[in-house]
Image 1 (tube, rainbow, N blue to C red):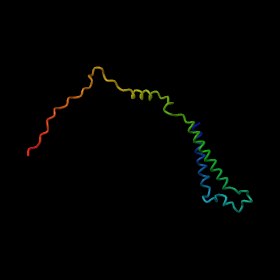
Image 2 (image 1 turned 60 degrees about the vertical axis):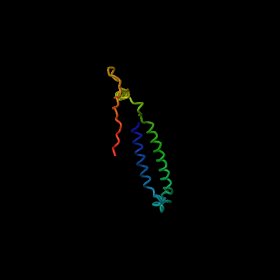
Image 3 (image 1 turned 180 degrees about the horizontal axis):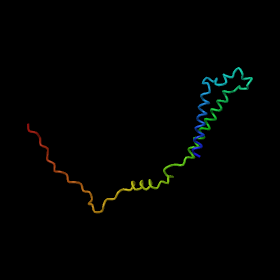
Length: 120
């Protein structure tokens, strides 16, 4: 399901790029090429068709991206990798001190001598 949605999203992206590149940035687009024969062929609103197609594909791409996000199985909680889970549990446990060792005692501080002042 995921791969099918991904392929459809890629196709929609390519179509969206093509429709945007066909349009003229100043509003003419393909309709300016058909201005002389617009009455004969019936192509009067090509710019509106391309604009509606752009909006449709953009909205469809957003819906597809949400559907892909929902269809993806994942997350750390849902994984069934028990070996990784046991290693993580072992790493999280603190290590216990051996029972035969003595508790830590700090070393005594060395004796300090008073500072001598230099003679004048």
